[in-house]
Amino acid sequence: MPYTPIVATLGYVLSPDRRQVLMIHRNARQDDMHLGKYNGLGGKMEPSEDIAACMRREIHEEAGIHCESMQLRGTLNWPGFGKHGEDWLGFIFIIDRYSGEPHAGNHEGTLEWVEVDRLMELPMWEGDRHFLPLVFDGDPRPFHGVMPYKDGRMQSWSYTRL
Image (cartoon, rainbow, N blue to C red; front, side, top):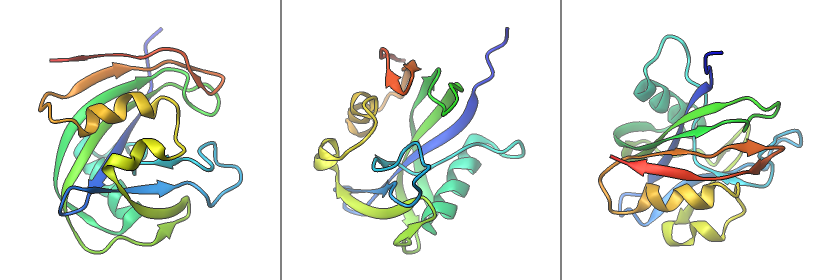
């Protein structure tokens, strides 16, 4: 059977001094599987776009800003992560230059600037604590990870760098 994950982006917008990152506090919808957690910005790729266009669109939709510069930091395969056990494949970006002013929030929650060195103090998915250090480290090589989930819980974590 072919592997057909939902393809998505996840972006971390850095402040101009690179000390803060724009996060969404998912606090707007009671039926949200991410309720109460902090996440980067992003979402599902549409059939008519490439992955970079998807990231730009999602950042604009969710924060009202335009990506001027971004780097692919890695890819993540999340088998079983979806609300109904769907598989997800995510492309993880750092957005290090943008134009415009971010919204205060959107239909998913409140947008907040968070100190990069305080990220691990936030409520987030258990798995995010494993890959976020790779997003923000100084290694220029992208990481490529797999993080299976079952019943909403991370089962394992592994990654490689090329």
